[in-house]
Amino acid sequence: MTSDDLIAIALGLPEARESAHFGKRDFRVGEKIFMSLPQAGRAVLKLTPGQQAMVVETDPGLCAPVPGGWGAKGWTSLYFDSADDERVRDLIGTAWRNVAPKALVAATLN
Image (cartoon, rainbow, N blue to C red; front, side, top):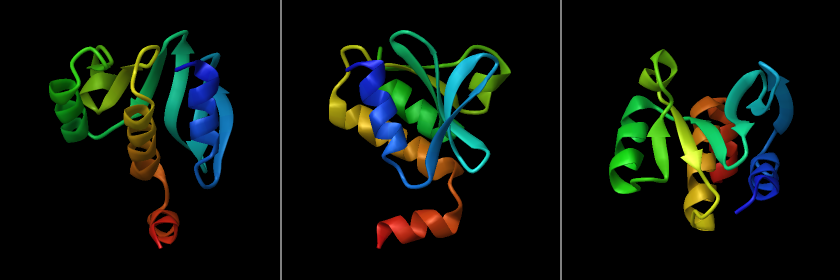
């Protein structure tokens, strides 16, 4: 999987757009970030702490908490170079749902 693949997945989600913060590319719904690309081969996703704990346990090596306070809040590194496409797509979708307006999420499920 490449950065271009991740970008296509992220921008394929309803109302997602690309922006930047701290000099890094990010992907948002409204003003809320659900994914950033801080470096080659690594994305950062906005998961809940519970989601983060589950993915770290079930997919060792695929994900890790971001160091420090951001990681404690659920921000999770995703090492996507050799990752399964469907699993990555699922994780990006989860991050999007975590920040998207509830009405938008509900509309996409119908």
